[in-house]
Image (cartoon, rainbow, N blue to C red; front, side):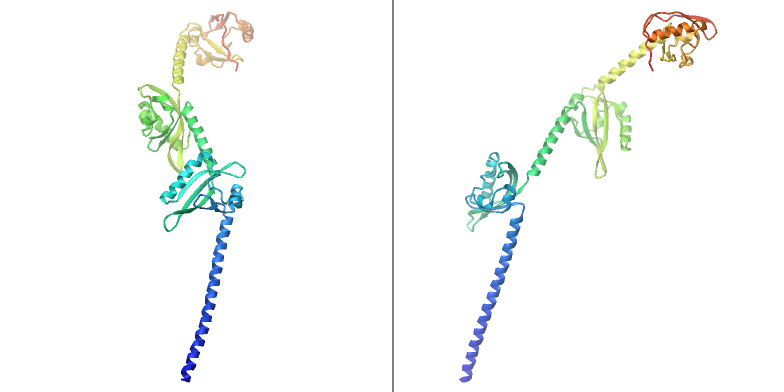
Length: 390
């Protein structure tokens, strides 16, 4: 019995020691858990206090329960001054309805929502925010609040506005200049053409885009256009004039100036401008006809028509010179106009020439020696002659 009693006492003592060790272990474990919890809390607190985005906890009534210190840096509000205020209180009036609608829809559908809107800064101006809302629900599925993360997108919005304005200006420029702006791919199909194409050709943008450029080119000018494209491929950029056919089948003259389009070092097409030069071409044709008529008239006159420079050298003389004096126009070009004047009349003619230069125009007579040595009479008409002052 004595041994049994000792054994029982020993067991009780060992059990007591074991309990103490368990309590010590539990205390150590609790301390470790508490320390880990504190470290985790400290880590997340440091993250939220130093993050650039806004972090807020919103209650069931839509009021702030917590806001991160970044509210002060981004919006100018001290966290303690904004706690308890409605989360939508500072939303721009023009954005309020749809922001509320999105937030409400997120609660109804239990989905996260993301919205972009303007929020009033403490100094009165508005900044653009992009907010992601994560609605919170209890075990019964009832809404209990939301976590909202917001970032400042004012710079992005400003860049978008500037880009939109730039595109608007570019579009207005493209749509209102007289030149057609176009882009074609490597197959020669229009991928873009400005609305001016309708004034030039009668075709609308929709009728032209997707079609081949060659469909509108005059058949006789197609080869030249291909050669022009090959020049561009070689880096030679020169304007090219050719004819196109409008919607009614009429011919119109255009001049294009284009360049290669490259993406990532690869050529993807050609972009350029197309200008209607039909009026200019018609005027040139009329000028050529008129010039030919006057040339035919001058070259068939019996009188000699000539033109000299200020130094007295001949620029032009009509073919009738050969009939009158036996000299061809090519033989006398660049010679002094008095090369065949009779020696006795040369001084007189030089004085008359000086008078002509000074604007005193009158008829005069003098003698010239023909190729065969015979004297010929020459009497220019009493009309003002055009003189080249070069």
